[in-house]
Length: 400
Image (cartoon, rainbow, N blue to C red):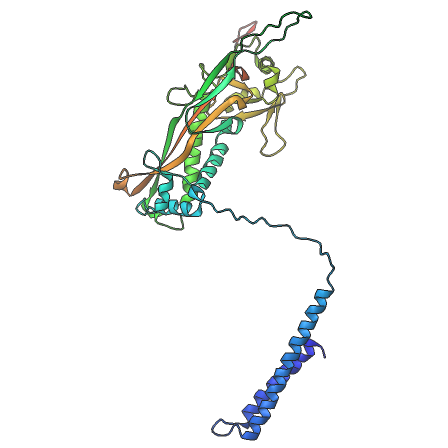
């Protein structure tokens, strides 16, 4: 008999045993001695069926095991087991404690948060928050995506060679001469940037409200926009020095031509070594003008991107737009020479009693950051003066 047939026979025997018991009970619900012995024999047969089924199943498993090949190929992808125990601000405990503190208006502050106390009284954001804030800043900040980002713990000095060694021809046996090497320094300091966010008490205490993502999005967008403005237009006084700054920014040039020819002049005025990784940064209004420019063959210079997420191109170089870029200037160069120094990590702090009167809870996010263009010659800036055309009865003149 097969295993299936044995199971069917066992089930049939069990149903027969149950029917026998029901039919043989007396008025007191009991079985006679003879009927009880008959039932016991029926139950023993059912148990024997079960033992035989188990024996045949064991034999079948043994047969399958013995029929396996000696070397079984691995057909599944190996999984990565992360046994690393995260501690401090990287731990889940710190992240959960921060979210609890935010939702309770910092009335429930766990001892674990003491590991990340900011000097100004706030709490340093968890590592995961900080990474996601950085990603949010890059999404809303074109300069961060193009620049060189540095983590600093204090004032950061960048050494720059201001003179390069020169080779010279000498006669055989003549004395070698060595020039003096000179170095300049750029210092990345730390300027404080903060943004405040208000949340109603009803939303704060509503567990369905995604407080974590709301704060990350709000802080990330606000700080990212403020950074981009400073990285482009900052004066260096209490804020980073911007790329378009007249002092400490890129090198301003005066084009000898106008229109499309001036753009070509801007590109080739930049040294060849910097053109390898160069890009344009300009305002949307400037792009509206640039897109009308044509080359000598009458073809538009503008090259729309054919791949989603990729920037448009001008003369083969990527074009990035910013609402904070000056409307009358174009920057072209290798923006990796713009260095951004992040001092420490960002922190959250409660604004105590500031909005209590109108049922709002305030939070503030802070960061310390600086930015400088370490080589002004790496970025060339063309100031574009709008052309004005006047028409008389017999002639048309264009003035710049």
